[in-house]
Image 1: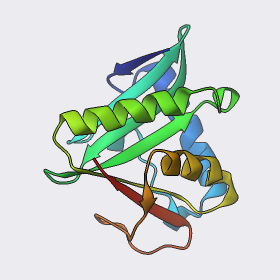
Image 2: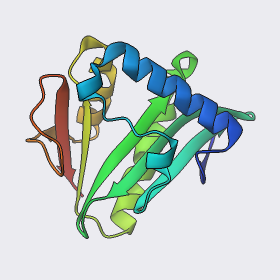
Image 3: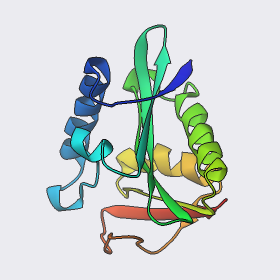
Amino acid sequence: MRIVAGDPAQAQIAEFLEEHLREMRAVTPPESKHALDLDGLRGPGITFWSVWDDGTVVGCGALKGLDPTHAEVKAMRTAPRRQRSGVATLLLTHILDEATRRGFTRLSLETGSAEFFRPARQLYAKFGFESCAPFADYRPDPNSVFMTRQL
């Protein structure tokens, strides 16, 4: 597997992200959906990575700077057929290393509270993320879980 930084609008990546957005719309009420679309992932302060294996996108994730010391994990997704195969671990390790390299001292994220998101919450907890209050522009939401960790 290899991690590549770049434009999420590349055809195969865009299709992968559209699947992600469809999935999020199916399991999350519209007012609680915080997944970024292609334009959002191309915004200022965001670095997007895709994970490739044998010519196929198998995962993605992004880092969004919130201020000089605080960043957010965005757009974490693993292809359903590749879940629990190390894709998310590889990518989250990369994002943590990159955030540290860039001088961030805190990394936060928002994920869902539904059962569907349990594996994601377990992964983040395994990497030292703990529950926290809403951060940045987020508001309290029963459909969201906010997590953070110091770097």
